[in-house]
Length: 124
Image (cartoon, rainbow, N blue to C red):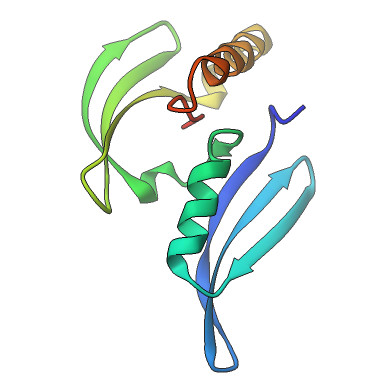
């Protein structure tokens, strides 16, 4: 199961004459780093994999424009991508406010949404 798979963009770094762009996949106490030569290729990988992963660096990629809804332990925000003009609705949870039951319900909700459409990436 990939419920706890986390994706994080890594800063570019120089390797000899080349600049490499990457991302990291984490689960539990393990991680693996992936690097490619083209920033656009790294972005495409992250975009595709984000459907299956929790994204920890959402604040780097999106600017939260407005709060458009609230629930008991979450809020729904309108977020605009910093690069480009893509807008998404993002359900935001504070992990410290979630009980174990809330966490289990959230994991099930994300799984259902992912089955409905790849548009529902886990922006948590």
